[in-house]
Length: 199
Image (cartoon, rainbow, N blue to C red):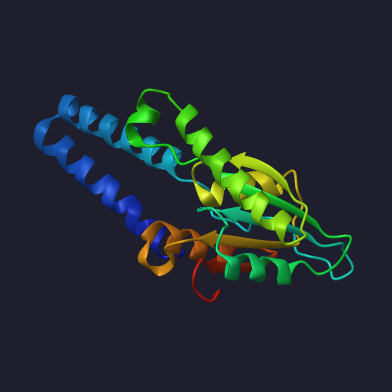
């Protein structure tokens, strides 16, 4: 936040509360102040940190490639692009599938269907990579693509991250995830849209 914005935020919170104290009295003012405090705490708790993700890649480090499959990696052109991104024999490849949980499933704490779908994407993607001669490990991650990548980088120090999605610029979710990963990752990053050229 820019330094000049903080006094404006404080004034926007304090001035209405003071006005309510003067007009409505201490009881109403205290109630409004309490509501404002609850709102501030809720907003602060719902914000996630937006710092850099991962460690900067060292040039001499062995390649560790994290392939995030928002959709199955089946398109031959996309598999070829991932294959070309693998630079050497010592390269390690990890395929990560975020578990997409629907609103009602989340509400009912039913995540099994989402995990099965993520595992299906992993099986298809791992099989496609194996057919191209690339061995890879597989993991199911958080439903939020960026959070899934951040969590995985804590265990798998990737030097490069590739996001694979089928709908590309037509999907606000994929576009937002790609833009955030591009701006926050300290590793190399590519976005491959299946059936299209990578970005």
